[in-house]
Image (cartoon, rainbow, N blue to C red):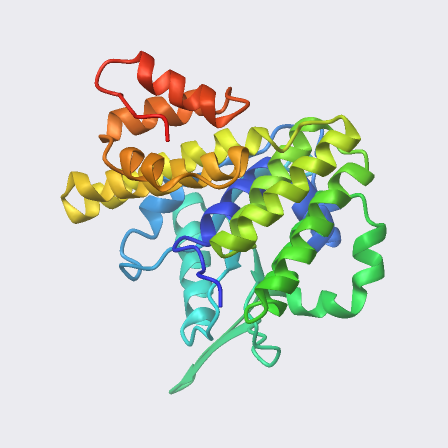
Amino acid sequence: MTTPRADIDSPWKEILELYFPQAIQFFFPSVAALVNWQKPHEFLDKEFQQLVREAEQGKRFADKLVKVSSKQGIELYLLLHLEVQAQRENPFEQRMFTYHFRIFDRFGQHPISLAILCDANPQWRPNQYQFDQAGTRLTFDFTSIKLLDYRDRWDELEASSNPFAIVIMAQLRMLESRNNPEQRKVWKFSLIRMLYDRGYSRQDILNLYRFIDWVMVLPDGLDRAFWQELRQFEEEQKMSYVTTGERIGFERGRQEGRQEGRQEGRQEGRQEANASLVLRLLGRRMGEVPESVRSQIQALSVDQLEAFGEALLDFSNLEEAIAWLSAHPNYSIDNP
């Protein structure tokens, strides 16, 4: 069994912001046909947060309210809700209506309400909210698409150049491999290799790599094996793009450590998170880390771990890491 990320909406929020036009073109082509994509679009995150501040506490959704220009020169508001929860959300239809009405009340214009469902329940397909009582009737329809439906369209995904084809494949492979981490490792490597085969730019590869790496989590042992295979593949291709992901991963770990420290009110939360990540990165680069080195790294402070983690990305062997530690005050370590 693999451990899921705590905030699985985060990679979706990032990828939607990076490739919003491509997302609408892929999932909702009839809506995309209305938009003049030559003009910039505007994310209204702050405005939307103010509108839904009274929504359920403790729940996070990858909602995006975006202002675009139509081909007729009229402003359009697109409400894109991405449901990333694994279980059915009973008030979902009501929530879609509530958000729709609040946007209309604020801007005086009905938004185009769209939903992407990432859950694993093929029977749950919300697309309408109804109210009928004592002669008062209301029917609110919205468009929703189900990622599970793309399981039968795999050839289409593989043939598509749209980055969201990769995104869907990663999400589906994640769901299919929840109880099979070995298979997940194989699929994860295949998807990342596909990024190179499709001729994406370096930045696109890194953007999509971050999404794949975030949703397709591997246990530590398999993760180390995966990185060794990936490093070898990049060396053969003479394109060391994803190795930059080590730095990305370290920065992400620092943010997770800070968040954990704030939530628990203890410096230990950050220190343990950073020590674990530094050891993981060191293992990826150097192989097996001797116990004496591990224990010394685990004893470092948060600031020391961050400095060492930044520096290790430039080391080519364990001896260089040890030499760096020995050369800095209060970073002393015995050569095992």
